[in-house]
Amino acid sequence: MMMPGLASHTARMAFSAGMPVIVKPATSTALVTWRCVEILDRAGVLPAGALQLVAGSSGDLLSHLAEQDVLAFTGSADTGLHLRSSADLLARNVTVNIEADSLNSAVLAPGVAPDSETYRLFVKDVLREITQKTGQKCTAVRRILVPADRLEDVSAELARSLEAVVVGNTADPGVQMGPVTTGSQLRDNRTGIEALATVGRVVTGGAEPMDGSGSPAGKGYFVRPTLILVDDPRRADVVHGREVFGPVASIMPYDGTPEDAAELVGLGRGSLVASAYGDDREWLESAVVGLGAWNGRIYLGSAGIAAVAFGSGAALPFLMHGGPGRAGNGAIVRPDEGAAAACGAGLVEKIKKGGRDGAPVEIMEGMARTNSGKAGRRRRRTDHP
Image 1: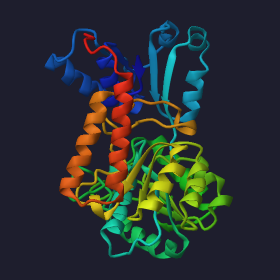
Image 2 (image 1 turned 90 degrees about the vertical axis):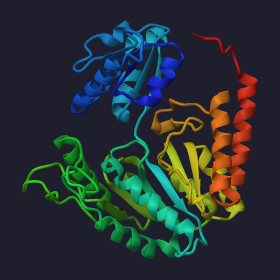
Image 3 (image 1 turned 45 degrees about the vertical axis):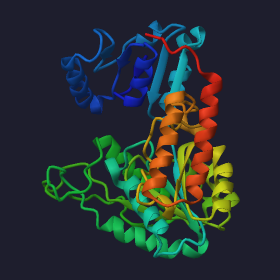
């Protein structure tokens, strides 16, 4: 099994199945991965040879994979397609799991008051998912959908909050967001922002160079947190087709119905996660049904769970981590095993105790029961070494 980095979920699933792991990180993150592997090796928590690292070219390694091996890849859709098309992998029917580009969405339901807990949760989650890890994570929010009559005021509030984010050298405790990883990523972010701006207007941020707080002038790969307002999302193919892998998101209107939101989200042709925020049970249920076809998992936010909400970017054991279509059609974690279903049910109980009963809690209870039923039907031997 080979991975582009030490993805804990992928490694955990492989080790649980008794499979050794060969890690092949990206060149730009090889040192970090090497240090992680070194720590695990010194701790002696794994059998000798269970975890190996290739920090450089993989050479002809793919040609040695056979029918019982698995190739897991996280990265661009183009590279994923190249790997899937390998003649050696196709000839041996090697299992290939791809986690590729993902234009994840956050949808604000109609009727959510600006002074409500649900709205505050929506703003907090979206801001975190744009700026955490400088937006360089697979579950970051790339598209924000709000009812048309709320477009301007929500855009303005998000812009004010993004402008307050301190960007710079993260060795400074006052800095909230660091640089992107490489010079190539910086260039990709700038060209991506310019491409998105052709179908919308930059509300805050932009592609212009900037100096980071605590860093020498002209040094560092810093990108301003950027929000682009798109008035006509159905005529903005680039918004649904190009992922800018950084602190960049587009905000767009929809007509307030879950059907319209689902249709717009579906233009991304497959994502890892979509989130919906509201307190109307009927609206949320319709949103789950509509969004489910194009997303690996759905996250619901409301006043009832605001105090204990974990955010759409969390890949928890009982949740799918993978997505259809553009997102790679893979699954690193599947919510169909007994322990995962039990964990899901346990979290529902925690949310009920820490928050207030409400539509999302009831919907989650149903999902936990469904997963538990699946686990019961599909349970196999548990004495695997």
